[in-house]
Image (cartoon, rainbow, N blue to C red; front, side, top):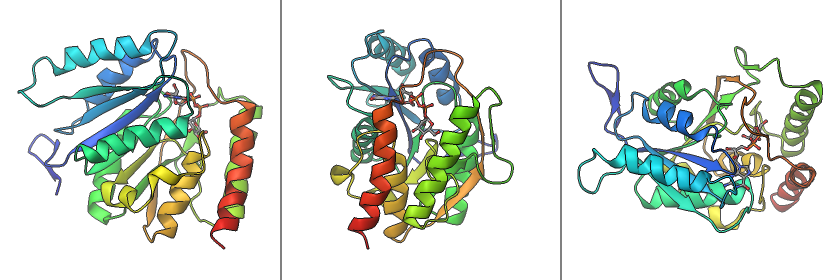
Amino acid sequence: MTELDSHGRHTGVPVTVVMPTYNEAANLPRMAELVLGLPIDGLHLKIVDDSSPDGTGRLAEELAEKYNADQPAGRRRMSVLHRTEKDGLGRAYVAGMSAALQEGAAYVVQMDADGSHPAEAVPRMLGTAVASGVGLVVGSRYVEGGSLDEDWGVHRVLLSRFANRYARTVLGTKIRDITAGFNLWSAATLRDIDLATLDSAGYSFQVELKYKAVRAGHSAVEIPIRFEERTEGVSKMTLRTQLESAVVPIRLRLKHR
Ligand SMILES: Nc1nc2c(ncn2[C@@H]2O[C@H](COP(=O)(O)OP(=O)(O)O[C@H]3O[C@H](CO)[C@@H](O)[C@H](O)[C@@H]3O)[C@@H](O)[C@H]2O)c(=O)[nH]1
């Protein structure tokens, strides 16, 4: 059970932040500093890099060496999982989450490496999960108090709103930000979902995982966050991943009628 010590730090619970990267060298040092500076003792940052041509994987190793340097033997604050090729956001998360569970994480946080997700919300998400006992806390743009960076173009805003409305309608779920990429999971919830047999390779993984968690009987809580547009690098979303996002909800619905 996590507790807050006299300095307001969460203690006593192993939390792993899984962060997939593809060409995020310009963002990674700042992200590592933000995440590893959070007031959560024992927090671990796991990078899942798909052989980024810009050297993100190598940089991640250098950062891990720096952050692990002053740790007692056998304890690491940061690790890097290298995959041989770009194989999709969903598969990168499956690899990172599976490794985190094997290493004994009690909670797993999903976070983009581009600064879109407010790292400072993680203690609040953890506190919510522990206090309420829910297995999934969604960092939500679409509940009261949540917001989107005004720099998101009209096209992206409409696409995001449509994708959410579409997936929610097809799947009949109540989660308002079902495409959200900033989520905290309890290990028990992830274990109840067969990560090895997901239908999604790419971004629709976000929808599939939440749907399967709710179907497995777990409840979700959404807490408001502000989503910032990245200032460095570019989104890796493609037409193909968007098409997958259109197909996966229908496939899930047909499978689980
Ligand atoms: N390892 C790996 N990482 C990837 C891959 N594709 C993307 N990433 C990493 O995944 C994170 C998100 O990728 P972006 O391409 O920046 O995502 P986005 O367009 O901003 O979309 C985000 O918001 C959506 C909701 O609007 C989310 O649905 C989506 O999952 C993501 O969080 C970044 O850290 C990026 O480097 C991949 O194939 N492999």
